[in-house]
Length: 160
Image (cartoon, rainbow, N blue to C red):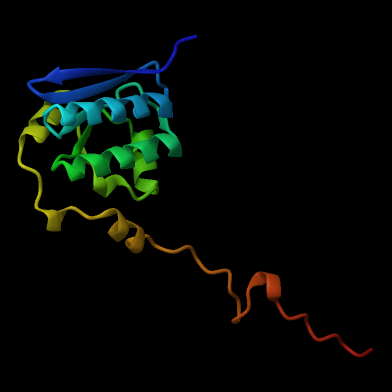
């Protein structure tokens, strides 16, 4: 059995991460990426990071949570996360979780490196985490006639 892992390369001071044996993205390699990133920026490395998700077919909430934490750390250092080679099933998880606006998504690694080399968007163009949660549509209310389904009035019984 293969052990999911992350390979991290330094390309001209920019971290480029790729996941191996991760059809389902395990949180452990993402946590390892976070630790390596924090050490990288502490030693003066660039705060941008390119994350190659080729071969990843599913990402769970624990891995997404680690990406959000990594995003926060990168933002504190003036950087950002750029994802590349993201399969549609994984991108749909980012969309369904309302996390897609936090990150930049590009087609391939070369485009990811080019995106990381561009100046970041102005802060007014990048939504914050709280703005995304506030803009999330709320589910339809189960209220019918002013009363919830669990507290419906009993129908008046017919006196027969």
